[in-house]
Amino acid sequence: MGAKVNITDEKVDELYAVMEKYKQEPGPLMPTLHAAQRIFGCIPLPVQKIIANELDVSIARINGVVTFYGHFSVEPKGENIVSVCLGTACYVKGSQGILDAFSHDLKVEVGETSEDGLFTLEATRCIGACGLAPVFTVNDEVYANGSVQMVKKVIQTLKK
Image (cartoon, rainbow, N blue to C red):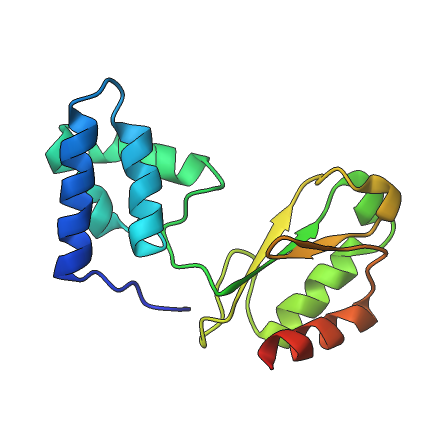
């Protein structure tokens, strides 16, 4: 479910050019994965296979790195990344309800991207704004003292 990955010849060529550069340096995997994430918007299995073949690294190792680090994604992310904090302070003050409201209104589960490609919903742990709990972020903007009522307003604003 969600947006489709666009793997074009041009993007693959760009990835090969990046890998050629990084193969000359020690530890080429992480910079290559960062570049792949930027080029494709995610690192799906077909892209992982290209990297594995070119860098002579097992697909299992690459997939392990991609799925371990939160920065990387195997599915495309939406234009707007909604992250709801589920850290203790936020959770106690109702962030689960905020997460549930986003999930319901966007018709996506945590970790999914909406069919229109506009939103990706994520649950996160403490973002360091406990005094403003509950908080959620949309892209780089922090929404303090969040509420279920705020969810509809934020979604409407972003869809405009």
